[in-house]
Image 1 (tube, rainbow, N blue to C red):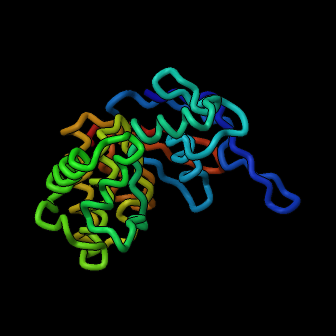
Image 2 (image 1 turned 120 degrees about the vertical axis):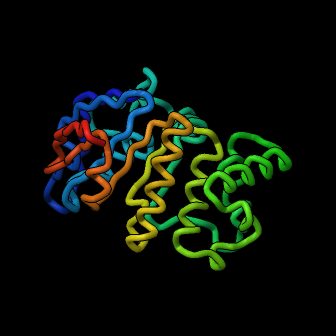
Length: 227
């Protein structure tokens, strides 16, 4: 699925140059589950952006199914993201004036699906996250946990190969955090996704079979046989 070789991402901060990632080598198997953890500013979100084709490395290669995302023209990279990669963020990123169903449908527009097909797929996706009765509600009429479920449905409606989640439980209380994690873990198994998540929550990290810890741009992998 993913093969990263020598991935370095360098930023300029005033007169200083900072390596958010410093020569990262990483393999992620098809259908695998990986949690990324580390201190603030350590490179977690930068690594996730590389995996999602949202940013390009200064040096190195990010191969996805044998294709180097770092070298793709922007139009092809946009197509890969639209077809193969679903994103879930801490802040939900829902459009406040659209209903839950319409928010989910937005992920299908780049795929060229017509209105009826989009509506059917969106309703199915919302049903799979327990919101089949909330299709017509706008985000302001939903709880934080329900909004995150809409965001998860939006990520999954295009039937991606990969689900990338950046602090998906960061805005939720403990009980809702556990509900959302159980949902994500269940969907990972059900759909055979490759699931990669950034979190600061150690209790979540301990549930993952594989943990990537980033410090000063370098990655250490820990296997958790008990997960």
